[in-house]
Length: 220
Image (cartoon, rainbow, N blue to C red; front, top):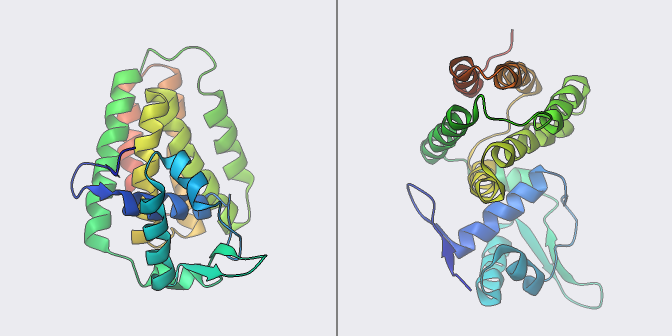
């Protein structure tokens, strides 16, 4: 098994991969503060890294206060109830800006490569996310849908492997940036609408502009 997966810029070690993927799962609400995580062996298999690397990463996250280790019959490793409070002190604007810039470059490249070549119906799932986001009221649900949109966009335009790259980036950003306010998320969803409309008619330049606009979206 591989011990690390490297992204552009500062490479991501196996332990950092564990941290970022757990952070992404919290953002996607597949686990919530207080929930028990899968066993280390299961996580190792899912992430394609060694079990000892996963165990070390989980121990580090426990020391940081992101996770709790409980013993006994009902024990295991749990997402800490104070997850959001701990993450807030880990924000790093400089590193986040670098990763966010690479994510922008990735999406612009995918859009430029795919515009005019998308099979009919390939955008339907993304449109459903946009429509649901437009109606969502719960801030956590808005944030979840925003994240899912970018994961699904990466897969729709680049395949499963590119989705994994996007997951690595987005997971790391979950730990480095504060979550956008609901008003910002709604402004970003308007960029999603513009992007899908441009992709649907095969208009590359407007599609790329929508991706760039998304990064600096501001509420009305």
